[in-house]
Length: 627
Image (cartoon, rainbow, N blue to C red; front, side, top):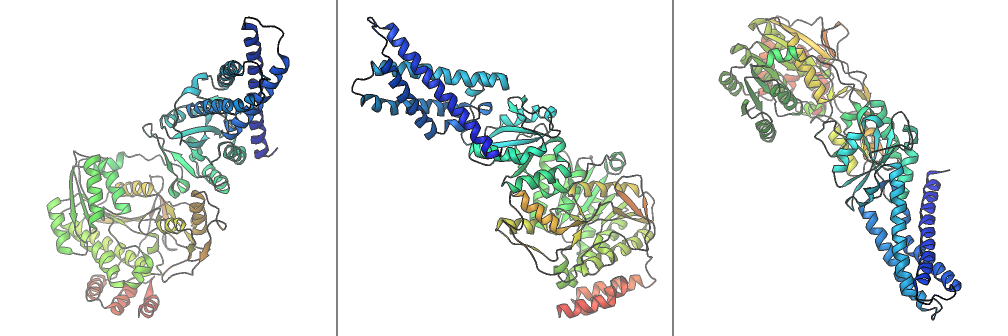
């Protein structure tokens, strides 16, 4: 039996019950009126049969018009009770004209009708309350007020752990939990807090179809508990999108009482790591901390996590006024007792950087400020050099000048075998910081990782806009793969890497365990399905060709770099690094000077010479491209 057939069968049974009760009520009404009359005489059998027939047909018309037969008794509530009363009144109004046309063939039609309506109403509600008592142990549920516009929800999770979730959702007046899909498929038919278990994951598609037919609208599919696991989320997402259902998630926080749309990060996140925060707390708690680029996606998350660890003071530098204002306002609310200093400034302004560092005297510095958009940096070479190289050098030198104990540099997987200006500048910054650390006595940590979902340089915001516009979603190449990590996980691991490096006058390069690279095509399809749409049907995916400086695949280390495990799960140490040449400082000064004068060709030539992996050939190609 198909889901549609099953739903229609259930509606037919519901209507059949209501018509049967109506016929019995009218029959009893005729008997009661006849028995209670002063001179009853013979029982008016023909009149009774006629009244029962007309009443039953009137009830059928009234209940079908108001769609009472589509109600699901296990989920019945106050709006359904109101509709039943409306249908009772409508049925009576339909009955009266037909009774009048009988020209007195029916005895005492008004008295019989009113008695029948009373008996019928009692029977309707009694039947529903008995059904509720048997299935949900909540017979009075029918009188619970529920918003008329309540959004239907189908919950996917662990039956044993969903009682609290259902309670929280029911407290949200515009949500109505219709059923539960149990992860293990156990105990179908059993109810939890009045919500029936409707099967396992294999039944999800059929259940969505049934509920859509019964309720006239597609329910949200809400995941909770162990259903948050990636393979389950992907399975639910595929089914939900094929049926036009939006997938939502309930925050596990006990205080959360609203469902929120699932983010791509929720679907792609790996199992939560069991990280020991003691080492990180040891370098942050009670310390003066400074974060450059603290208003950006990564920088702001680092700031949030640092603020929660109890530093003595927290200084933030950012060149974007709005980003700085937003994170400052957030911290004033979340950490009102923390000494926070928000400074507007560009890291390429050495004088401004020195001034902020002198005032704050940081012990721990995290340098997250950078320009990251690959195609834009190909066309804005000098700006990339001034921010990514000169800015990093300014911050490192200022940190060394005030005696900072630790300096953390946020690098990128694009610094490995760089095929673009952005990657080459980040690689050069790695080399420059290691040299500054060796000369100054600081302990420096450089951390490489791939794309952060939802960051300003991520494809996620672009895909979201394209999907909202109806498509198409554009990929540079169907075969492109990238490493992805959530901003929360990346930031936590960056702080762990900072705690690993304890030796002064030494720098260490770390890479984060990003898992397997993900095809961008899969990400695009996932984001389309998150909106309840089908890739290639509702939203088209097209290919535009690789952009300047873009590679099909990224790597986290060079072939000559050996990677070893650390004490922290998810953080790996790169054992060998390429030492800067003797001419490094002179070449670096010449590069920054050329970029300051906006001499692109000369700046690219010097960049290619200082980063052999980038090379002069790629530099010349970029010169030709921007000429």
